[in-house]
Image 1 (cartoon, rainbow, N blue to C red):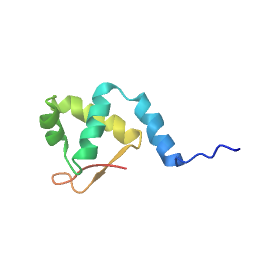
Image 2 (cartoon, rainbow, N blue to C red; image 1 turned 90 degrees about the vertical axis):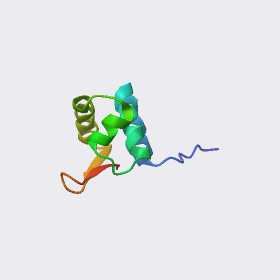
Image 3 (spheres, rainbow, N blue to C red; image 1 turned 90 degrees about the horizontal axis):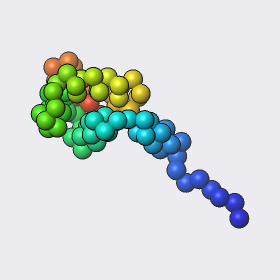
Length: 81
């Protein structure tokens, strides 16, 4: 009998990158997953962490391709890719 992989390559990509994240980055990723379209200020308030800390971690998540920003600078927000 042959083993057949049922998970898509996309799932492997996400799982691999999530394993590289620190606890704060995983918290932010999960917050964005639950609160689609939230901005940096909302994430900082929701998690009770400083704006600059959230901003730094969001840039990491953007560079890894795990999240994306949609919309304008003032009205846009973050979404899971």
